[in-house]
Image 1 (tube, helix red, strand yellow):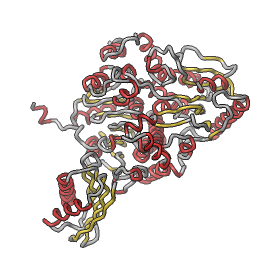
Image 2 (cartoon, chains in turn red, cyan, blue):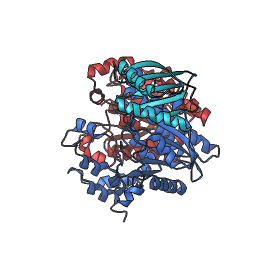
Image 3 (cartoon, rainbow over the protein chains, first blue to last red):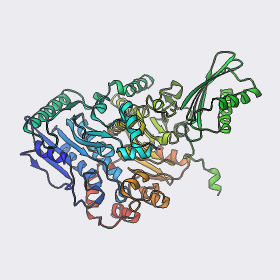
Image 4 (cartoon, rainbow over the protein chains, first blue to last red):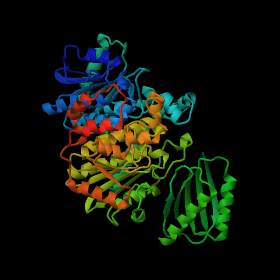
Length: 258
Length: 99
Length: 280
């Protein structure tokens, strides 16, 4: 529900955008003094696809996100996009695989990436879980990632229980390992050490943002938009952390040998 | 996982280098590169612990048959049987000979 | 049976051999080759044996004279999973190919995808690398085709199935599987009733290459044969950019999904009819 709370708080007074799946909340509003589009994926207990009723990113959500972003690109302005991220996972189900959920998520990633390349500042605000394929479709193509500092804010490739099963470890073993291997950790500070976040923010009530919380986050979003407008459209700002040194080293070697 | 080192007498340095195999289940990757005259060094990184003696004996048997060229060999092993190790080494030596 | 004797399996080849097999004779040049030993900084410390190329081969060369960079994933190493180094190799190569195009050099890309997606031992760095790969495909695709090949036997899953969905063209064989989530994970998350990961015919009927092609989610369906795959890749490269990119058809797919009765559990024929019925 955090995603919805933050969407409602940030988009107060904004115009809701219709014609999209009910699991998407999209509104055109103002941030600072410029028009922006807010986008969130939320729970929908009546979702036609039963495996996507708890805020998962599924077929309708993937294609729907693409549509919501494409509309902004087609408008031809450079309006910023604010992706509010609280996505527990992609949808796991037979209908999803059969109908090509990978293609739906590709459409979302495609649109966000094209918006970024077209000069729309794309900012992702992480207020809850940002898991795996769901995050790849909704947020990870942003120019800037901002995370709220809270134990419930989490970026990861796989939930703990599944990851333990797949790697043949107990959850305790996994946690012990994660404590010494930053990319495996589940906490937001370890994630921050990878250099992927532009900013982390502390708020007083993450579940129900106060006026102060809202002001602080809005201000940070405005700063992020300005930062993008002053810089480039690529993701190079994510390279540079010591814990991601190999990513930069590999690129340097490729360039030398190209 | 364990890292092991071995050294054996060898002939003249090999000319070329070679890569054979893959770090897949029951397989290994072998990188062979020219070494210093008279010496063959082998570094083994293996997923199977406590097998130092078995590697030693296997290498001794292989190099007994014929003095190898001087090489630095790197092995990344993912639980290969002695038969597979021998096969990969022979493939590697053959590729170097053809270079 | 005579056919069998004339065919050379592509699926049986390793990543490096696959790249060589597709490139014009003598044009293969590997970047960050295995002797440079740019290996995963994360596996050894977790007691996992690394591979010298981290399971990814980047090769420059030519196909029918066209400048190409190939990224080939070795499915036999850690299930083709992408860690920091392997992921950065693919993303970095695609980024440089896009830069080439901005400098007037028409480099295109071929991705040989055999992968389970993120390597869990490098979790968040694998995921970040895959986001970079997505970004780079969308960038390069503005200038030149990016061709994805899923030959088998690992298939293409996780975040890299999204990468496959971003490609200008996708080529599959009967041995290929393409899906977001691996069968075991779906069974764990949703139950046996929803997805029986041991029922191979069931899995293939939904996510296999033939079904993906018949549903319009892949562009070419080819036999597991080096010459035929080589020929099809060449044709696609020569075709240039597609008139319509599959991942840019939100309206179309939303409209198709809107008319689906999602209540009953789904079968392969329903998917084909839903997505392809109107094509004829």
